[in-house]
Image (cartoon, rainbow, N blue to C red; front, side):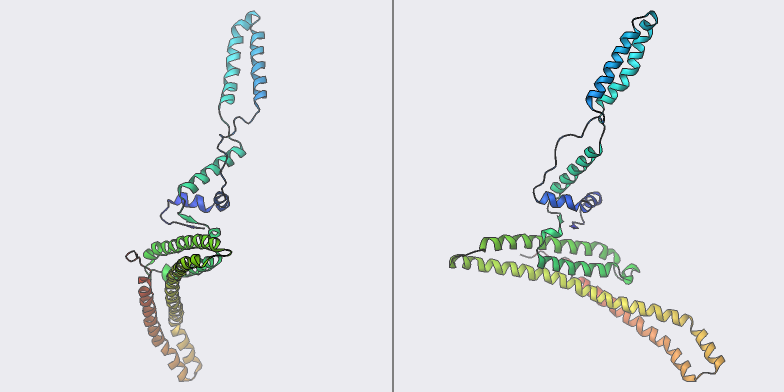
Length: 298
């Protein structure tokens, strides 16, 4: 499920945690609107206890001592029973029904602000999976975590891009399904003439969404290149930190001087990796520009 990142976090979490109910709602399910169940004990038991209390009070009131204690005992026993009778006590079934009503209400309220995978046809699912892989590759990268990229903008822009792609694919899938259903079976040349530009419009829209996905993938590829350079730079830095130990060992063992020359090249390699990392990060920033929202199209 993809949820509009602008939704309140609590509402978004409720939707994500109840995909099964949302699928049922898509198919026309409406929860039972009756109130939750009342007391856990059946009414006839409560009535029997209340009746026994009244009888006990009357019996105690028959004697001299009972005339003074009977009414008091009656009140002391009747009040708790009345509370139990009139206070609602939720049962597990009642809590589940209330939860289903709450989920359904949020689903209706936020209709159009979440997309289920079940809403998409197979080509759209493939495109969405590509977009999600690209977003995950950037979000989970070390260069993003270390702040070498614009991690703040990534945290905002990438979920927004993922949501926009999912939203467009859901609209495309629904319209494409209705389009195919309308044109199923035999059709006249007049219908074919009208349907042809509409079919091209669907194909053009899919191509436009594909462009968004490919822009995400280009950004992820640049980030992956920066990730490789960053990892290599870290490894070289660790080797440089131990360089004096290698040089000491070479000197003590009388190893070939050429080995020492090779070791000193670590510094040059590290410098080259620094430059490669800067170029990769710069390329990633350039690729990110294509993901920024521009002026709305026609």
